[in-house]
Length: 246
Image (cartoon, rainbow, N blue to C red; front, side, top):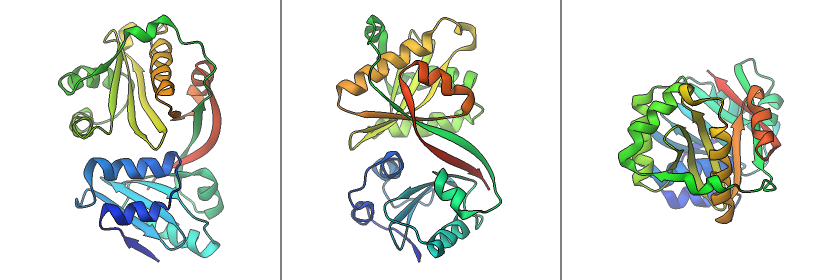
């Protein structure tokens, strides 16, 4: 059975002490928005699976074992028309054997053996007042609705969930959350006019140095064409994810 979660205490109870990049992504939405909005909702399935829904984008977190019947029920729920995008562990998607449009992503973890350069001193944390500047860099690298990104990021910054980093106002990275010792990075990007100078690598080096010093494990999701870049900058494959387009 899949039912809606109401109340943050119920969500934390459903998480059941399990902590990984998926569970903490679900938790970060609750930290930023709570459980009382229609655009940000949470569900639990008998057996321990959790689902967050943020404007029609779902994240599936496994905090228990799924039997075959539960997996079939989960996939039926995810493809019922409520969600436009679904991020979930690839092994679960593969086991479901459903026909769906998806992109296979690499889940990578920072191995913490890269020498921290002096450029860490040039990496700065961006305030809410500078989100517009960062959104201009994001627009150069990602096909997203930048107005919506600006609104969402401003809210997450106010609630202390996300953090923006930049190097010389030319490259940026977003710490989407740091929860229970797990940091998830995204939107690593350089302005088109400033590419080819190694700025993204320098920025990533500085950000990972700061997050590691804070005691956090650092994860990213990336496509195959970016795997080499992240490997060069200290990341190893940790697992695989599927991003479904419904």
